[in-house]
Image (cartoon, rainbow, N blue to C red; front, side):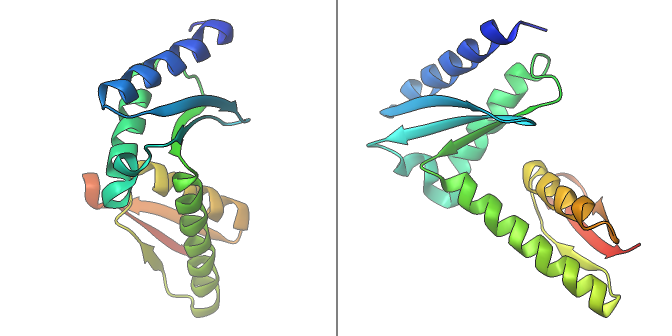
Length: 151
């Protein structure tokens, strides 16, 4: 694994090259958190990254995680643009909390999805914090769902 001093500048440079290659004018900032590194994109040209529910943003995040997966350790690399992912993360977590409460009160397992691996992880983290419910991923590939049920 590379040293942190070497790793983060290489991630930033990679993302900057990718953004320029996409023909976009966006600034790149690295923000460290406990369990992830957030790559914040901002500037005058965010729209192409955010079209079609952020497909380009998801694709860039997937590529960045694939390129650096052997160096990132336990943390994830999260690519955001103008707070788009942060807002989507809040929506996924809010929906997970709603379904956790519904599973608790009704006793009926609740499904959310299909979700990509990043969103499924957010749901599993919310469920883990709740303590009295459990979650599992079901399905294949892009059609995977998370099922939340009482323990």
